[in-house]
Length: 61
Image 1 (spheres, rainbow, N blue to C red):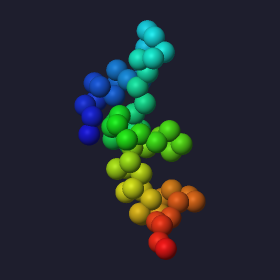
Image 2: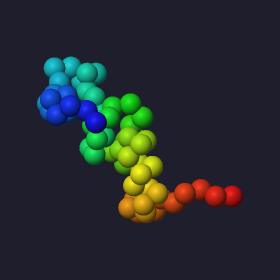
Image 3: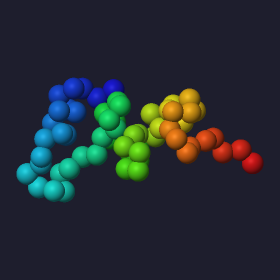
Image 4: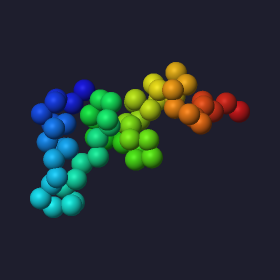
């Protein structure tokens, strides 16, 4: 879980566009971020396994 100060800093508009940091809206993690869902890989897996993300189901073949 990212500190609230780090999350607040990432929400502010940066001076330069390359400094923009994409963070998970649930936990604030910046690595392993999926833009399509706005989640990190850890939160994505938790929500997908619980069936809370529509259209996503665990692969089995």
